Length: 557
Ligand code: CTP
Ligand code: MG
Image 1 (cartoon, protein in one colour):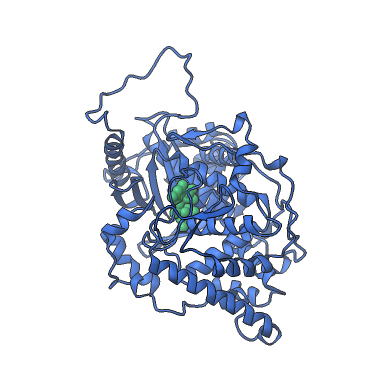
Image 2: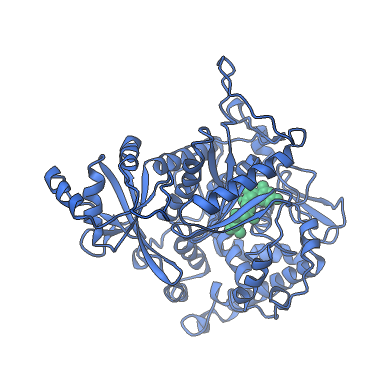
Protein backbone atom coordinates (compact mmCIF):
# COMPACT_ATOMS: atom_id res chain seq x y z
CA UNK A 1 0.00 0.00 0.00
CA UNK A 2 1.44 3.40 -0.91
CA UNK A 3 1.94 5.68 2.03
CA UNK A 4 -0.11 8.87 2.01
CA UNK A 5 1.75 11.85 3.34
CA UNK A 6 0.39 15.29 4.07
CA UNK A 7 2.57 17.93 2.43
CA UNK A 8 0.49 20.98 3.29
CA UNK A 9 -3.00 21.50 4.57
CA UNK A 10 -5.31 19.32 2.45
CA UNK A 11 -2.53 18.02 0.20
CA UNK A 12 -1.49 14.40 0.17
CA UNK A 13 1.23 12.60 -1.70
CA UNK A 14 0.83 8.97 -2.75
CA UNK A 15 4.55 8.35 -3.49
CA UNK A 16 6.58 6.23 -1.12
CA UNK A 17 9.27 8.37 0.52
CA UNK A 18 12.72 6.94 -0.10
CA UNK A 19 13.64 6.42 3.51
CA UNK A 20 10.49 4.40 4.11
CA UNK A 21 11.10 2.16 1.15
CA UNK A 22 10.95 -1.46 2.23
CA UNK A 23 14.40 -2.95 1.82
CA UNK A 24 13.24 -6.49 2.39
CA UNK A 25 11.63 -6.95 -0.99
CA UNK A 26 11.42 -10.48 -2.23
CA UNK A 27 13.24 -11.38 -5.44
CA UNK A 28 10.75 -13.74 -6.97
CA UNK A 29 7.09 -14.59 -6.98
CA UNK A 30 4.15 -12.65 -8.26
CA UNK A 31 4.76 -9.37 -6.38
CA UNK A 32 1.74 -7.04 -6.55
CA UNK A 33 -1.71 -8.70 -6.81
CA UNK A 34 -2.48 -9.52 -10.43
CA UNK A 35 -5.08 -7.33 -12.11
CA UNK A 36 -6.22 -8.62 -15.53
CA UNK A 37 -5.49 -6.15 -18.34
CA UNK A 38 -9.17 -5.85 -19.35
CA UNK A 39 -10.13 -5.04 -15.77
CA UNK A 40 -7.38 -2.44 -15.48
CA UNK A 41 -8.29 -0.77 -18.78
CA UNK A 42 -12.03 -0.74 -17.95
CA UNK A 43 -11.39 0.70 -14.51
CA UNK A 44 -9.21 3.48 -15.94
CA UNK A 45 -11.70 4.22 -18.72
CA UNK A 46 -14.49 4.48 -16.15
CA UNK A 47 -12.45 6.90 -14.08
CA UNK A 48 -11.85 8.98 -17.21
CA UNK A 49 -15.61 9.02 -17.96
CA UNK A 50 -16.20 10.55 -14.52
CA UNK A 51 -13.34 13.06 -14.70
CA UNK A 52 -13.03 16.73 -15.53
CA UNK A 53 -9.79 18.63 -16.07
CA UNK A 54 -9.93 22.19 -14.83
CA UNK A 55 -7.42 24.97 -15.30
CA UNK A 56 -7.37 27.10 -12.14
CA UNK A 57 -5.59 30.25 -11.01
CA UNK A 58 -3.61 28.31 -8.41
CA UNK A 59 -3.76 25.64 -5.78
CA UNK A 60 -5.87 27.82 -3.39
CA UNK A 61 -8.68 27.71 -5.99
CA UNK A 62 -9.16 24.05 -5.20
CA UNK A 63 -11.61 24.81 -2.39
CA UNK A 64 -13.64 26.99 -4.70
CA UNK A 65 -13.48 24.36 -7.42
CA UNK A 66 -14.62 21.66 -5.02
CA UNK A 67 -17.65 23.79 -4.11
CA UNK A 68 -18.50 24.38 -7.75
CA UNK A 69 -18.17 20.70 -8.67
CA UNK A 70 -20.10 19.50 -5.62
CA UNK A 71 -23.19 21.25 -7.01
CA UNK A 72 -23.30 18.55 -9.67
CA UNK A 73 -22.54 15.52 -7.51
CA UNK A 74 -20.12 14.01 -5.02
CA UNK A 75 -16.42 14.55 -5.79
CA UNK A 76 -14.28 11.47 -5.18
CA UNK A 77 -10.73 12.69 -5.82
CA UNK A 78 -8.83 15.76 -6.91
CA UNK A 79 -5.27 15.74 -8.29
CA UNK A 80 -3.22 18.88 -8.73
CA UNK A 81 -0.32 19.36 -11.15
CA UNK A 82 1.46 22.16 -12.94
CA UNK A 83 2.19 22.10 -16.63
CA UNK A 84 4.34 24.56 -18.53
CA UNK A 85 3.22 25.83 -21.90
CA UNK A 86 4.70 28.72 -23.93
CA UNK A 87 6.82 29.67 -20.91
CA UNK A 88 3.73 30.03 -18.73
CA UNK A 89 2.88 27.68 -15.87
CA UNK A 90 -0.66 26.38 -15.87
CA UNK A 91 -2.22 25.06 -12.69
CA UNK A 92 -4.45 22.09 -13.39
CA UNK A 93 -6.81 20.02 -11.25
CA UNK A 94 -8.18 16.66 -12.37
CA UNK A 95 -11.52 16.13 -10.64
CA UNK A 96 -13.02 12.65 -10.37
CA UNK A 97 -16.76 12.52 -9.63
CA UNK A 98 -18.46 9.52 -8.03
CA UNK A 99 -20.95 9.32 -10.90
CA UNK A 100 -20.66 9.91 -14.65
CA UNK A 101 -24.02 11.77 -14.52
CA UNK A 102 -22.43 14.43 -12.31
CA UNK A 103 -19.82 15.11 -14.96
CA UNK A 104 -22.54 15.36 -17.62
CA UNK A 105 -24.44 17.87 -15.45
CA UNK A 106 -21.26 19.89 -14.92
CA UNK A 107 -20.52 19.93 -18.66
CA UNK A 108 -24.08 20.94 -19.51
CA UNK A 109 -23.78 23.85 -17.12
CA UNK A 110 -20.46 24.98 -18.62
CA UNK A 111 -20.93 28.40 -20.13
CA UNK A 112 -19.40 29.91 -23.25
CA UNK A 113 -16.88 32.66 -22.63
CA UNK A 114 -17.83 36.15 -23.79
CA UNK A 115 -15.55 36.03 -26.81
CA UNK A 116 -16.15 34.60 -30.24
CA UNK A 117 -12.57 33.43 -30.47
CA UNK A 118 -13.17 30.59 -28.04
CA UNK A 119 -15.38 27.85 -29.50
CA UNK A 120 -17.45 25.90 -26.94
CA UNK A 121 -16.19 22.44 -27.95
CA UNK A 122 -17.74 19.41 -26.25
CA UNK A 123 -14.75 18.45 -24.12
CA UNK A 124 -14.07 17.58 -20.49
CA UNK A 125 -11.36 20.29 -20.43
CA UNK A 126 -12.63 23.49 -18.80
CA UNK A 127 -11.36 26.41 -16.74
CA UNK A 128 -12.62 27.93 -13.56
CA UNK A 129 -13.58 31.56 -13.82
CA UNK A 130 -13.56 33.90 -10.84
CA UNK A 131 -17.20 34.92 -11.12
CA UNK A 132 -18.75 36.61 -8.10
CA UNK A 133 -22.32 35.65 -8.94
CA UNK A 134 -21.38 32.01 -9.08
CA UNK A 135 -19.61 32.16 -5.78
CA UNK A 136 -22.57 33.77 -4.00
CA UNK A 137 -24.88 31.11 -5.49
CA UNK A 138 -22.58 28.45 -4.19
CA UNK A 139 -22.70 29.87 -0.70
CA UNK A 140 -26.46 29.37 -0.72
CA UNK A 141 -26.07 25.68 -1.55
CA UNK A 142 -24.18 25.16 1.71
CA UNK A 143 -21.96 22.38 0.36
CA UNK A 144 -18.89 21.15 2.15
CA UNK A 145 -15.79 22.68 0.61
CA UNK A 146 -13.11 20.41 1.94
CA UNK A 147 -11.35 17.70 0.04
CA UNK A 148 -7.87 16.31 -0.19
CA UNK A 149 -5.86 17.46 -3.15
CA UNK A 150 -3.47 14.76 -4.22
CA UNK A 151 -0.09 15.96 -5.42
CA UNK A 152 2.49 13.49 -6.62
CA UNK A 153 6.05 14.12 -5.63
CA UNK A 154 8.46 12.75 -8.18
CA UNK A 155 12.11 12.66 -7.10
CA UNK A 156 14.46 14.86 -9.06
CA UNK A 157 17.42 13.35 -10.91
CA UNK A 158 19.71 14.51 -8.10
CA UNK A 159 17.54 12.84 -5.44
CA UNK A 160 17.43 9.65 -7.45
CA UNK A 161 21.21 9.64 -7.88
CA UNK A 162 21.75 10.25 -4.19
CA UNK A 163 19.44 7.41 -3.23
CA UNK A 164 21.02 5.05 -5.74
CA UNK A 165 24.52 5.88 -4.52
CA UNK A 166 23.41 5.06 -0.96
CA UNK A 167 21.83 1.73 -1.91
CA UNK A 168 23.07 -1.45 -0.32
CA UNK A 169 23.64 -3.27 -3.61
CA UNK A 170 22.86 -3.26 -7.32
CA UNK A 171 19.57 -5.16 -6.81
CA UNK A 172 18.34 -2.44 -4.52
CA UNK A 173 19.40 0.20 -7.02
CA UNK A 174 17.43 -1.51 -9.79
CA UNK A 175 14.33 -1.78 -7.62
CA UNK A 176 14.54 1.83 -6.36
CA UNK A 177 15.11 3.19 -9.81
CA UNK A 178 11.98 1.37 -11.02
CA UNK A 179 9.85 2.63 -8.11
CA UNK A 180 10.91 6.22 -8.76
CA UNK A 181 10.55 6.27 -12.52
CA UNK A 182 7.47 4.20 -13.26
CA UNK A 183 4.33 5.88 -14.51
CA UNK A 184 2.41 7.38 -11.60
CA UNK A 185 -1.27 7.14 -10.70
CA UNK A 186 -1.91 10.64 -12.08
CA UNK A 187 0.21 9.92 -15.17
CA UNK A 188 -1.91 6.88 -15.91
CA UNK A 189 -5.20 8.71 -15.26
CA UNK A 190 -4.17 11.60 -17.53
CA UNK A 191 -3.33 9.20 -20.34
CA UNK A 192 -6.78 7.60 -20.27
CA UNK A 193 -8.29 11.05 -19.86
CA UNK A 194 -6.49 12.32 -22.97
CA UNK A 195 -7.98 9.37 -24.90
CA UNK A 196 -11.40 10.24 -23.50
CA UNK A 197 -11.09 13.80 -24.77
CA UNK A 198 -10.76 12.56 -28.36
CA UNK A 199 -13.73 10.22 -27.88
CA UNK A 200 -15.88 13.05 -26.54
CA UNK A 201 -14.78 15.46 -29.27
CA UNK A 202 -15.77 12.98 -32.00
CA UNK A 203 -18.88 11.66 -30.27
CA UNK A 204 -21.34 13.88 -32.17
CA UNK A 205 -20.38 12.29 -35.49
CA UNK A 206 -19.28 8.91 -34.14
CA UNK A 207 -21.32 7.96 -31.05
CA UNK A 208 -19.50 4.63 -30.74
CA UNK A 209 -15.99 6.08 -31.09
CA UNK A 210 -13.56 4.35 -28.76
CA UNK A 211 -10.02 5.57 -28.09
CA UNK A 212 -7.73 3.15 -26.28
CA UNK A 213 -4.19 3.74 -25.06
CA UNK A 214 -1.53 1.16 -25.89
CA UNK A 215 2.27 0.93 -25.76
CA UNK A 216 4.20 2.08 -22.72
CA UNK A 217 1.19 3.94 -21.25
CA UNK A 218 -0.43 0.60 -20.40
CA UNK A 219 2.12 -2.18 -20.87
CA UNK A 220 3.56 -1.48 -17.37
CA UNK A 221 6.97 -0.53 -18.76
CA UNK A 222 6.11 3.17 -19.12
CA UNK A 223 8.18 5.87 -17.46
CA UNK A 224 6.91 9.15 -16.08
CA UNK A 225 6.42 11.39 -19.14
CA UNK A 226 6.29 8.52 -21.63
CA UNK A 227 4.47 9.19 -24.90
CA UNK A 228 0.85 8.25 -25.37
CA UNK A 229 0.06 5.79 -28.18
CA UNK A 230 -3.68 5.66 -28.98
CA UNK A 231 -5.96 3.65 -31.22
CA UNK A 232 -9.16 5.21 -32.49
CA UNK A 233 -11.98 2.86 -33.48
CA UNK A 234 -15.07 4.52 -34.94
CA UNK A 235 -17.37 1.67 -33.97
CA UNK A 236 -17.35 -0.90 -31.21
CA UNK A 237 -15.45 -3.79 -32.78
CA UNK A 238 -15.92 -6.06 -29.77
CA UNK A 239 -19.68 -5.80 -29.42
CA UNK A 240 -21.60 -6.42 -32.62
CA UNK A 241 -25.14 -7.47 -31.75
CA UNK A 242 -26.41 -9.16 -34.92
CA UNK A 243 -29.94 -9.54 -33.51
CA UNK A 244 -30.56 -5.77 -33.81
CA UNK A 245 -32.75 -4.97 -36.85
CA UNK A 246 -31.91 -1.28 -37.15
CA UNK A 247 -28.54 -0.73 -38.76
CA UNK A 248 -26.61 2.51 -39.38
CA UNK A 249 -26.75 3.80 -42.94
CA UNK A 250 -23.33 4.26 -44.52
CA UNK A 251 -22.13 7.02 -46.76
CA UNK A 252 -20.66 5.46 -49.86
CA UNK A 253 -16.99 6.14 -49.84
CA UNK A 254 -15.28 6.93 -53.13
CA UNK A 255 -12.37 4.79 -51.99
CA UNK A 256 -14.36 1.94 -50.43
CA UNK A 257 -12.44 -0.62 -52.47
CA UNK A 258 -9.22 0.41 -50.73
CA UNK A 259 -9.62 0.40 -46.93
CA UNK A 260 -6.19 1.99 -46.43
CA UNK A 261 -7.08 5.00 -48.58
CA UNK A 262 -10.42 5.28 -46.78
CA UNK A 263 -8.64 5.23 -43.43
CA UNK A 264 -6.15 7.89 -44.60
CA UNK A 265 -9.06 10.15 -45.63
CA UNK A 266 -10.74 9.67 -42.27
CA UNK A 267 -7.49 10.51 -40.52
CA UNK A 268 -7.13 13.71 -42.57
CA UNK A 269 -10.52 14.86 -41.27
CA UNK A 270 -9.80 13.80 -37.70
CA UNK A 271 -6.45 15.58 -37.66
CA UNK A 272 -8.20 18.76 -38.87
CA UNK A 273 -10.75 18.46 -36.07
CA UNK A 274 -7.98 18.02 -33.49
CA UNK A 275 -6.04 20.91 -34.94
CA UNK A 276 -8.94 23.36 -35.23
CA UNK A 277 -11.28 22.57 -32.39
CA UNK A 278 -9.94 20.38 -29.62
CA UNK A 279 -8.53 22.31 -26.61
CA UNK A 280 -4.88 21.74 -25.79
CA UNK A 281 -4.01 19.96 -29.07
CA UNK A 282 -1.02 21.58 -30.75
CA UNK A 283 1.64 20.70 -33.32
CA UNK A 284 -0.76 18.37 -35.14
CA UNK A 285 1.04 16.44 -37.89
CA UNK A 286 -0.24 13.71 -40.21
CA UNK A 287 2.04 10.83 -41.12
CA UNK A 288 -0.34 8.95 -43.31
CA UNK A 289 2.08 7.21 -45.68
CA UNK A 290 3.59 5.09 -42.88
CA UNK A 291 2.80 1.40 -42.62
CA UNK A 292 0.57 2.27 -39.67
CA UNK A 293 -0.64 5.80 -40.49
CA UNK A 294 -0.61 8.10 -37.46
CA UNK A 295 -1.57 11.58 -36.36
CA UNK A 296 1.01 13.08 -34.00
CA UNK A 297 0.17 15.93 -31.69
CA UNK A 298 0.97 17.45 -28.34
CA UNK A 299 -1.67 17.72 -25.66
CA UNK A 300 -0.46 20.82 -23.84
CA UNK A 301 -2.91 20.62 -20.94
CA UNK A 302 -2.04 17.08 -19.95
CA UNK A 303 1.56 17.64 -21.04
CA UNK A 304 2.15 14.70 -23.33
CA UNK A 305 3.16 13.73 -26.86
CA UNK A 306 0.43 11.72 -28.56
CA UNK A 307 0.36 9.31 -31.52
CA UNK A 308 -3.12 8.45 -32.74
CA UNK A 309 -3.64 5.52 -35.10
CA UNK A 310 -6.67 3.63 -36.43
CA UNK A 311 -7.20 -0.07 -37.15
CA UNK A 312 -4.31 -1.10 -34.94
CA UNK A 313 -5.94 -3.20 -32.24
CA UNK A 314 -3.19 -5.81 -32.58
CA UNK A 315 -0.88 -3.14 -31.07
CA UNK A 316 -3.23 -3.02 -28.10
CA UNK A 317 -3.10 -6.82 -27.69
CA UNK A 318 0.68 -6.68 -28.03
CA UNK A 319 0.70 -4.24 -25.10
CA UNK A 320 -1.50 -6.67 -23.18
CA UNK A 321 1.03 -9.42 -23.84
CA UNK A 322 3.85 -7.22 -22.49
CA UNK A 323 1.70 -6.31 -19.49
CA UNK A 324 1.16 -10.00 -18.75
CA UNK A 325 4.89 -10.68 -18.88
CA UNK A 326 5.46 -7.75 -16.55
CA UNK A 327 2.92 -9.23 -14.12
CA UNK A 328 4.35 -12.75 -14.12
CA UNK A 329 7.34 -12.12 -11.93
CA UNK A 330 8.16 -9.07 -9.85
CA UNK A 331 11.68 -8.87 -11.28
CA UNK A 332 10.57 -8.35 -14.89
CA UNK A 333 9.49 -4.68 -14.67
CA UNK A 334 12.48 -3.41 -12.65
CA UNK A 335 14.85 -5.21 -15.00
CA UNK A 336 13.19 -3.90 -18.17
CA UNK A 337 13.23 -0.39 -16.66
CA UNK A 338 16.93 -0.60 -15.84
CA UNK A 339 17.80 -1.76 -19.34
CA UNK A 340 15.54 0.74 -21.09
CA UNK A 341 17.08 3.55 -19.02
CA UNK A 342 20.60 2.32 -19.73
CA UNK A 343 19.81 2.21 -23.47
CA UNK A 344 18.35 5.72 -23.36
CA UNK A 345 21.29 7.22 -21.50
CA UNK A 346 23.84 5.48 -23.72
CA UNK A 347 21.93 6.66 -26.82
CA UNK A 348 21.30 3.11 -27.93
CA UNK A 349 17.62 4.06 -28.24
CA UNK A 350 16.18 7.42 -29.19
CA UNK A 351 12.78 9.11 -28.83
CA UNK A 352 12.80 9.34 -32.63
CA UNK A 353 12.20 6.61 -35.16
CA UNK A 354 15.33 5.62 -37.05
CA UNK A 355 17.85 2.91 -37.72
CA UNK A 356 18.30 2.07 -34.09
CA UNK A 357 16.68 -0.38 -31.74
CA UNK A 358 13.32 0.75 -30.29
CA UNK A 359 12.14 0.36 -26.71
CA UNK A 360 9.69 -2.25 -27.95
CA UNK A 361 12.47 -4.38 -29.52
CA UNK A 362 14.66 -3.87 -26.46
CA UNK A 363 11.84 -5.08 -24.21
CA UNK A 364 11.52 -8.22 -26.33
CA UNK A 365 15.29 -8.75 -25.97
CA UNK A 366 14.91 -8.65 -22.17
CA UNK A 367 11.93 -11.02 -22.22
CA UNK A 368 13.78 -13.43 -24.50
CA UNK A 369 16.74 -13.45 -22.12
CA UNK A 370 14.42 -14.13 -19.16
CA UNK A 371 13.07 -17.14 -21.05
CA UNK A 372 16.63 -18.43 -21.48
CA UNK A 373 17.85 -18.24 -17.90
CA UNK A 374 18.21 -21.50 -16.05
CA UNK A 375 15.59 -22.12 -14.79
CA UNK A 376 13.57 -19.66 -16.89
CA UNK A 377 12.04 -16.65 -15.15
CA UNK A 378 9.12 -16.49 -17.62
CA UNK A 379 7.62 -19.00 -20.08
CA UNK A 380 7.60 -18.60 -23.88
CA UNK A 381 4.49 -17.19 -25.51
CA UNK A 382 3.59 -20.54 -27.02
CA UNK A 383 2.86 -21.81 -23.51
CA UNK A 384 0.39 -18.95 -22.95
CA UNK A 385 -1.15 -19.76 -26.33
CA UNK A 386 -1.56 -23.43 -25.38
CA UNK A 387 -3.17 -22.53 -22.04
CA UNK A 388 -5.65 -20.09 -23.62
CA UNK A 389 -9.35 -20.77 -23.00
CA UNK A 390 -12.45 -19.72 -24.94
CA UNK A 391 -12.52 -16.33 -23.18
CA UNK A 392 -9.02 -15.58 -24.41
CA UNK A 393 -9.78 -15.76 -28.12
CA UNK A 394 -9.04 -12.45 -29.85
CA UNK A 395 -8.47 -11.55 -33.50
CA UNK A 396 -7.47 -8.12 -34.76
CA UNK A 397 -6.81 -7.09 -38.34
CA UNK A 398 -6.91 -10.83 -39.19
CA UNK A 399 -4.07 -11.47 -36.72
CA UNK A 400 -4.64 -14.16 -34.11
CA UNK A 401 -4.02 -12.52 -30.72
CA UNK A 402 -5.17 -15.44 -28.57
CA UNK A 403 -3.16 -16.23 -25.42
CA UNK A 404 -3.83 -16.88 -21.76
CA UNK A 405 -5.08 -13.72 -20.03
CA UNK A 406 -5.64 -14.96 -16.48
CA UNK A 407 -2.23 -15.58 -14.95
CA UNK A 408 -3.58 -17.09 -11.74
CA UNK A 409 -3.22 -20.58 -13.14
CA UNK A 410 0.54 -20.15 -13.65
CA UNK A 411 2.91 -21.14 -10.86
CA UNK A 412 5.84 -18.96 -9.80
CA UNK A 413 9.22 -19.51 -11.43
CA UNK A 414 11.83 -21.69 -9.70
CA UNK A 415 14.47 -19.16 -10.68
CA UNK A 416 15.66 -17.32 -7.55
CA UNK A 417 18.36 -15.09 -9.09
CA UNK A 418 18.61 -11.56 -7.76
CA UNK A 419 17.99 -8.51 -9.96
CA UNK A 420 21.73 -7.90 -9.88
CA UNK A 421 22.46 -11.40 -11.22
CA UNK A 422 19.84 -10.99 -13.91
CA UNK A 423 21.19 -7.63 -15.04
CA UNK A 424 24.73 -8.98 -15.28
CA UNK A 425 23.35 -12.09 -16.98
CA UNK A 426 21.58 -9.95 -19.59
CA UNK A 427 24.80 -8.27 -20.68
CA UNK A 428 26.76 -11.54 -20.66
CA UNK A 429 24.06 -13.31 -22.66
CA UNK A 430 23.91 -10.69 -25.43
CA UNK A 431 27.65 -10.13 -25.42
CA UNK A 432 27.95 -13.71 -26.64
CA UNK A 433 24.81 -13.91 -28.77
CA UNK A 434 25.37 -14.67 -32.45
CA UNK A 435 23.27 -11.83 -33.92
CA UNK A 436 24.87 -12.41 -37.31
CA UNK A 437 23.41 -15.85 -37.84
CA UNK A 438 20.60 -16.17 -35.33
CA UNK A 439 17.20 -14.57 -34.82
CA UNK A 440 15.20 -14.52 -31.57
CA UNK A 441 11.67 -15.70 -30.93
CA UNK A 442 9.75 -15.00 -27.71
CA UNK A 443 7.04 -17.26 -29.12
CA UNK A 444 9.26 -20.33 -28.87
CA UNK A 445 11.69 -18.86 -26.36
CA UNK A 446 14.43 -20.02 -28.67
CA UNK A 447 16.78 -18.69 -31.32
CA UNK A 448 16.78 -19.80 -34.96
CA UNK A 449 18.66 -19.36 -38.23
CA UNK A 450 17.75 -15.92 -39.58
CA UNK A 451 15.48 -16.19 -42.61
CA UNK A 452 16.57 -12.78 -43.93
CA UNK A 453 19.77 -10.77 -43.91
CA UNK A 454 18.63 -8.09 -41.49
CA UNK A 455 21.25 -7.06 -38.95
CA UNK A 456 18.93 -7.86 -36.03
CA UNK A 457 16.06 -10.32 -36.28
CA UNK A 458 13.42 -10.37 -33.53
CA UNK A 459 10.33 -12.25 -34.56
CA UNK A 460 7.10 -10.28 -34.19
CA UNK A 461 5.23 -12.27 -31.50
CA UNK A 462 1.83 -11.81 -33.16
CA UNK A 463 2.66 -11.47 -36.88
CA UNK A 464 5.27 -14.17 -36.89
CA UNK A 465 6.52 -13.72 -40.42
CA UNK A 466 7.65 -10.17 -39.56
CA UNK A 467 10.80 -8.89 -37.90
CA UNK A 468 10.16 -6.09 -35.38
CA UNK A 469 13.76 -4.86 -35.65
CA UNK A 470 13.99 -4.74 -39.41
CA UNK A 471 14.87 -1.06 -39.17
CA UNK A 472 18.11 -1.69 -37.25
CA UNK A 473 21.23 -1.27 -39.40
CA UNK A 474 24.45 -3.22 -38.96
CA UNK A 475 26.18 -0.10 -37.70
CA UNK A 476 23.55 0.41 -35.00
CA UNK A 477 23.66 -3.24 -34.02
CA UNK A 478 27.43 -2.97 -33.63
CA UNK A 479 26.95 0.04 -31.40
CA UNK A 480 24.44 -1.86 -29.30
CA UNK A 481 26.90 -4.71 -28.97
CA UNK A 482 29.76 -2.48 -28.04
CA UNK A 483 27.60 -0.79 -25.37
CA UNK A 484 26.62 -4.22 -24.06
CA UNK A 485 30.28 -5.26 -23.82
CA UNK A 486 31.12 -1.96 -22.17
CA UNK A 487 28.29 -2.41 -19.62
CA UNK A 488 29.37 -5.94 -18.88
CA UNK A 489 32.91 -4.85 -18.06
CA UNK A 490 31.75 -1.85 -16.03
CA UNK A 491 29.73 -4.18 -13.83
CA UNK A 492 32.65 -6.58 -13.49
CA UNK A 493 34.96 -3.73 -12.49
CA UNK A 494 32.35 -2.68 -9.91
CA UNK A 495 32.40 -6.11 -8.30
CA UNK A 496 36.17 -5.91 -7.88
CA UNK A 497 36.18 -2.42 -6.35
CA UNK A 498 32.74 -2.20 -4.78
CA UNK A 499 33.86 -1.18 -1.31
CA UNK A 500 36.13 1.60 -2.52
CA UNK A 501 33.47 2.86 -4.91
CA UNK A 502 30.41 2.95 -2.69
CA UNK A 503 29.95 6.50 -1.48
CA UNK A 504 32.91 7.78 -3.53
CA UNK A 505 32.29 7.46 -7.23
CA UNK A 506 29.36 6.33 -9.36
CA UNK A 507 28.81 2.59 -9.14
CA UNK A 508 26.22 0.08 -10.33
CA UNK A 509 23.44 1.68 -12.37
CA UNK A 510 25.02 5.11 -12.00
CA UNK A 511 28.22 4.01 -13.69
CA UNK A 512 26.20 2.26 -16.43
CA UNK A 513 24.08 5.32 -17.12
CA UNK A 514 26.96 7.73 -17.69
CA UNK A 515 27.34 9.53 -21.00
CA UNK A 516 27.99 7.36 -24.02
CA UNK A 517 31.65 6.54 -24.52
CA UNK A 518 31.36 7.18 -28.25
CA UNK A 519 30.23 10.43 -29.91
CA UNK A 520 26.83 10.14 -31.53
CA UNK A 521 27.18 12.29 -34.63
CA UNK A 522 24.37 10.49 -36.41
CA UNK A 523 21.79 11.66 -33.87
CA UNK A 524 22.61 15.35 -34.37
CA UNK A 525 21.51 17.95 -36.86
CA UNK A 526 24.30 17.10 -39.25
CA UNK A 527 23.19 13.53 -39.32
CA UNK A 528 23.42 11.94 -42.74
CA UNK A 529 20.28 9.93 -42.25
CA UNK A 530 18.39 8.82 -45.29
CA UNK A 531 14.91 9.23 -43.78
CA UNK A 532 13.30 7.92 -46.92
CA UNK A 533 15.27 4.71 -46.49
CA UNK A 534 14.41 4.55 -42.80
CA UNK A 535 10.77 4.95 -43.70
CA UNK A 536 10.90 2.03 -46.10
CA UNK A 537 12.90 -0.35 -43.97
CA UNK A 538 10.94 0.13 -40.80
CA UNK A 539 8.49 -2.54 -39.99
CA UNK A 540 6.12 -0.44 -38.01
CA UNK A 541 7.82 2.78 -37.18
CA UNK A 542 7.01 6.08 -38.81
CA UNK A 543 9.43 8.54 -40.42
CA UNK A 544 10.05 11.81 -38.65
CA UNK A 545 8.61 14.97 -40.10
CA UNK A 546 11.05 17.78 -41.02
CA UNK A 547 10.41 19.71 -37.79
CA UNK A 548 11.04 16.53 -35.87
CA UNK A 549 14.47 16.24 -37.46
CA UNK A 550 15.24 19.74 -36.28
CA UNK A 551 14.34 18.65 -32.77
CA UNK A 552 16.79 15.80 -32.80
CA UNK A 553 19.83 17.82 -31.95
CA UNK A 554 19.12 19.33 -28.52
CA UNK A 555 17.98 16.03 -27.07
CA UNK A 556 21.24 14.34 -27.88
CA UNK A 557 23.55 17.26 -27.53
N1 CTP B 1 4.03 -2.41 -31.56
C1 CTP B 1 3.69 -3.53 -32.25
N2 CTP B 1 4.51 -3.96 -33.25
C2 CTP B 1 5.64 -3.30 -33.57
C3 CTP B 1 6.00 -2.14 -32.87
C4 CTP B 1 5.15 -1.72 -31.85
O1 CTP B 1 2.67 -4.13 -31.97
N3 CTP B 1 6.40 -3.74 -34.56
C5 CTP B 1 3.14 -1.98 -30.47
C6 CTP B 1 3.60 -2.52 -29.11
O2 CTP B 1 2.45 -2.79 -28.34
C7 CTP B 1 4.33 -1.35 -28.51
C8 CTP B 1 3.48 -0.21 -29.06
O3 CTP B 1 3.16 -0.59 -30.39
O4 CTP B 1 4.38 -1.40 -27.11
C9 CTP B 1 4.09 1.14 -29.05
O5 CTP B 1 5.34 1.12 -29.68
P1 CTP B 1 6.47 2.11 -29.22
O6 CTP B 1 5.89 3.46 -28.99
O7 CTP B 1 7.59 1.97 -30.16
O8 CTP B 1 6.93 1.42 -27.85
P2 CTP B 1 6.60 1.76 -26.36
O9 CTP B 1 6.58 0.46 -25.62
O10 CTP B 1 5.36 2.60 -26.27
O11 CTP B 1 7.87 2.55 -25.88
P3 CTP B 1 8.17 4.14 -25.81
O12 CTP B 1 8.16 4.45 -24.36
O13 CTP B 1 9.52 4.27 -26.44
O14 CTP B 1 7.11 4.87 -26.58
MG1 MG C 1 5.15 4.53 -27.20
